[in-house]
Image 1: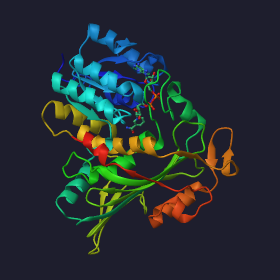
Image 2: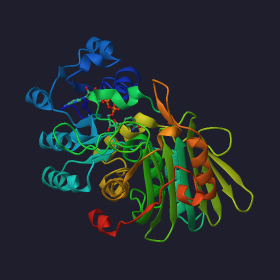
Image 3: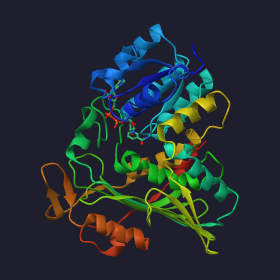
Length: 399
Ligand SMILES: NC(=O)c1ccc[n+]([C@@H]2O[C@H](COP(=O)([O-])OP(=O)(O)OC[C@H]3O[C@@H](n4cnc5c(N)ncnc54)[C@H](O)[C@@H]3O)[C@@H](O)[C@H]2O)c1
């Protein structure tokens, strides 16, 4: 087996970015693609390149492993397939980089943990901001106490999503369960804007690759789309240390507000997209200093792929493993276990034929975000009482 041979599983959707990286940008000799597994590989926008490079293609991982081996398997497949594919790859001797969310349910982690222990294989999850130099700089500054105690973290994203988005890839988007009954739990919190919830918990983690669990939350989930789960979420939560965390997001909007983050600490406030220029993390210190740190999208797919290979080869620590993802997973499991999904009142929902949105929702949620309040506190006509959830039992799955 080549020291860095890579198997790509799922290349038609987001997985095409790994095809692009490996076939068009990285050294083909140094990072050889051992094969591609995707039953619909010809739908990959880079299928021509895969053929040009004569990469062996298979419908199943089993068929690939009958003829080849790989140091690393990269999974970018529907969520309900992840756990089985992680285990299959490890059983066949590969380490794994799996796209986020790793699994839909905390309980799915048991089998993965056992497989990791038995095979000695490593796992990394594709939350790319954990591999970003800019984010790691913020995390180290927090851990070193440079910003002081965390006071309040807030995150808001309004990204319109259309019917094509919800119908993609065989229709697993927005599903509670797949056709075979397995959990999917695909939602705006678990998947659509997961990075911007995960990042708050990650930055509050007590070590460089851990995240802080929430112990309680008050939450509301809503939908305008014909999905099982929810396209709109608003919650406030608290960590064990008592730090308030506010998370707002919607896909049911007709105006786009890119992820906007305001992380307040005693001695500094860290912002993202709050003021121009876009896509920059900026630290505003109480003493007047303003420090732009750069884009957290600095490394994207190459960061997680090279970071994972570095981890496997012992060159760098694990940046995003089980300890890093469990608190986010606990949040969206708790939302689905305890929080009802409310349909927005019909008179507020507009169906354009391509998309459904709720009149003025992007602005309502912006006001919640600005004031650190929940929709029911703002008295919006569509708002329902938030449900209080105790997450302490979920923290048992940590570590
Ligand atoms: N990190 C990010 O920013 C980011 C962005 C988008 C999606 N994702 C994640 O990537 C994963 C895939 O999402 P997507 O939107 O690309 O989904 P998709 O449905 O668009 O694509 C999934 C691909 O997997 C293939 N596939 C289906 N069954 C398979 C099987 N049994 N074996 C191998 N391949 C199979 C499909 O043919 C398709 O090519 C999800 O976990 C998603 O959350 C991550």
